[in-house]
Amino acid sequence: MSGFKLFSGTANKAFADEIGRYLNVEVGDASVKQFSDGEISVQITESVRGHDVFIIQPTCAPTNDNLMELLIMIDAFKRSSAKSISAVVPYYGYARQDRKAAPRVPITAKLVADLLEKAGIDRIITIDLHAAQIQGFFNIPADNLFGSILFVDYIKAKNFKNPIIASPDIGGVTRARSYASKLGYDLVIVDKRREKANVAEVMNIIGDVEGKDVILVDDMVDTAGTLVKAAAALKKRGATSVMACCTHGVLSGKAYENLNSKDLDELVISNTIPLKQNHEKITVLSAADIMGEAIYRIHNNQSVNSIFL
Image (cartoon, rainbow, N blue to C red; front, side):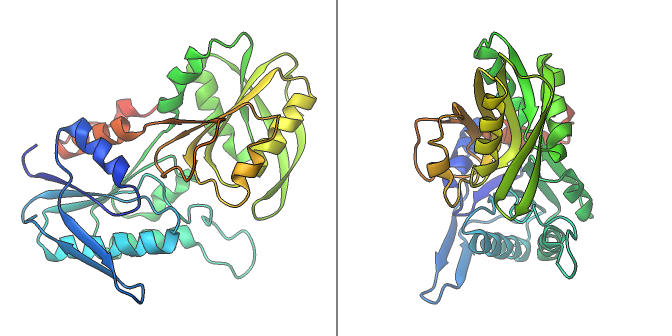
């Protein structure tokens, strides 16, 4: 595509390569190194003058390193006279800090947005932000693609006898309702109370799951504590099976240990974050084609509306 260049940071080069194959373009040449003291050094080793540049870099763990690397890359492209710079951030780190949930705490998701804008991006493209209102933290175009488009066909192919969609908490009802509407399934809600970070206590199931194949849907899975406890509560209420579809596989802490629970039958995630290790219950679907199509349409001034579910 004329006037278009694709580059990748070090956070998920395999994902960038997949996008490149979809778009039939080579990922550009950029040198990203670290000095012995941890400082990041970036050099763009090909001309980008007058080109639209798309930088693919999820800000997953190590979150601070990957975010700083992205900021430095943006600055390098800005100083290299790129026509426009789009940050393609499949997973937006710090998204869970999107509001003041307690006294004297920051809104770090807004701070990250400010940093990216100040560095020089003209647009951000991401998938399944933890909180949709983060789009409003930017004063530039922010395209938040919906990960549900990845999972719907996979769910249909399962041919469940009595499927039902479940939201793992009240905050995820809008997302779950979107799945339920597209699939024509009923919806239930798992009501929980979170006592502290990364610890969730399942309280109640709102709806009937007796004899049902439950599909839990969420934007991310971190320690998997919420999913496992939700699955246990659903099985206790008579669910036949429990599968979870989560766009971003953060999988930190005791996640892999938690996945050994007999109550959760399968976890389906995308490849927005590199998978640390394989697990018999984990299925990975690629989001590269969706992201590649969004990049193509944005570069060619076409609507991305049909990509949204």
